[in-house]
Image (tube, rainbow, N blue to C red; front, side, top):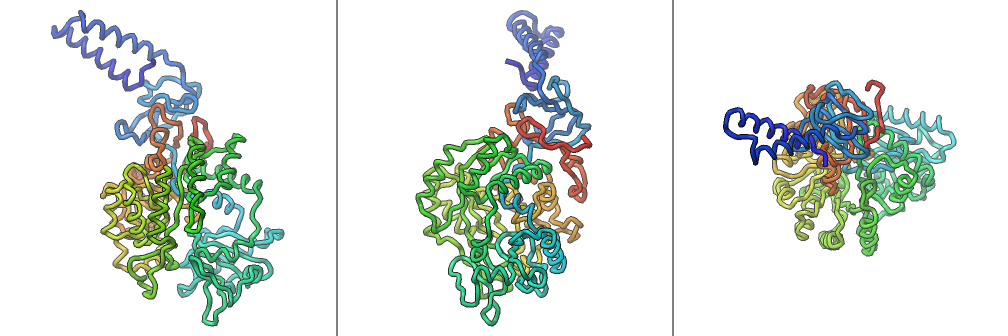
Length: 581
């Protein structure tokens, strides 16, 4: 068997040591030294005639994610796996060689919480990302409607709560003056509030008499008339009548989304709210040889679902073991979001003391679903933004002795100081999204929670110090920016792209670049039980890696947003390549 670079290096050092001992009279070339030398020399000669790899990256600053050997100069890829790492001299030759010229290389990004189908479909809808004002949003909606005259519905999203005058929610009148004759439905950036025009309400037969008894609210004015804002599940009164895209359109959207992901260095995703129907789309891509993202799908479970659905999901877990397509988890939603006062809090909202939000699940039902799911070997992701929801979820997890089960809590925008240490103690994974803490959209959030709870806002640093296994992701399109580099910048600086505020927003929760990079690579693999397959650059691992235009670990934080991915390698194949490399 060929030697690894490390074994070869150790063998050479052993031979040199033995000859040194012989020259000094401390040993001889008789047994046992002579046999050791001969064996080592033979193995070294064999290793020097290793077959050439398929692809070689050399002259790099390669961050492996492997604590034993964190930095190497070169990496060789044979077929779809990493065959060697080490110095340029140690990794041998290859059919194709890329000179990195000192550039940074890391494992591929693993987006551990994403809604990839929705995000991909959104590429063909109204994009309100970074609009910044009501006027700009209206301009974009009007332009889209004009350029898409055959679209029966105008749909899209990305708006933020702070863009409307006087801290109010959006209204139907805001849209009526732009598109009066076609229905419009636009999701907030977090997906938890919908904005519709009068025509959409008319077609959905929603009026002052319409009631909604589920989780959410049809927002009404002082006269009892719908305003055009729909909170949480109340969005369904309109979305149920929106024509769904065809299967062919969904497949086409996923292919475009994969291209975008490859250009950003994303090689693995973990879908945070899936279904068997959505899983079938990825199955089709895999069958057709068009799947270019390793995909892990968590199936959505609600309090009203048939309990037998868990058995179906457990069967999907067994039939989809990866490494391209996995379905080993379920997704629960405990609450809404802070900005609309639907996140479940331990204390009332600072700007609306009449409410503290309500959890979606009762503790009794939550305990039962957690017990049943773990009994079936299913991993659990639970959306919990408010500190009350976080506590309820930890309580439910603790009852099933979660160590080793890698149960996850998603988002955790607020957490009680008493609960934060429980993550490390219980082995619960905090799965968080740095881009949600972009100060550009923080004002409504800060106003809602008040100064006392701000200290543990998106508490990445405190989680790191506690020993919790922090994992990062985008939540795209609930967070509009898919780019992991921008998320790393936010985690490191707690600033906007323009560097505001000067000291960072809640700066005590900033973390280092390497911690953020690890959370987006190594820990993504760990969070889906894939740490023996991917997430590190070392022999035997799947060859998923990326090359950067600048060294994130050496440049000033202010330079991070301008950094680009130049090369993305997935399964040993180049799936994105910038013309500069």
